[in-house]
Length: 241
Image (tube, helix red, strand yellow):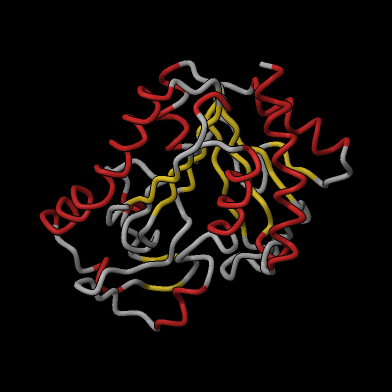
């Protein structure tokens, strides 16, 4: 384990590599974001339920996994490093004072400390393991604080940019299972797909970007239910490619 990532060993023969960019709400002791600590338990800091779900899914599939070990408020690992939102000054209406005050050198140091080694690890594992498919797990809030008029009725969503080979198979499988599933919802992978763009699309490697509504994976029972649902679908999609 490093500051940026935890690697869970698995069987390369699974053909899969799991990446979870927002699995942690950890803020290193030498970084003071200037926010109420209670916000670290909200969706702006972490994809709620994803650490537990990722571990369960990886165990069921016996696949290797890379889990982020730093909050998205420190560095959003699922953004390009040159994007302002990679170190957010504001998130869902909450100002992050220390990030807003960072100068160019401070932002560069933060990216070098966390973003670069995290993505270097993914690159190394993709080259070493040669997976048949990458997949990533995220969770989404049922309602954004800044957009109370928008409803998010989906239980899950599958995101994609240009390569939808795996996505369309997964959408169909989830809908057959009776899961209200968003096709590039609750937001579009055409706009937000940085990790899979970098590590999968650039290589022509199929991938799945799976979103689960966070209120459905708040408990151990919810996590187990979703892991039991998702693992065979992920395996089925990989086998069908």
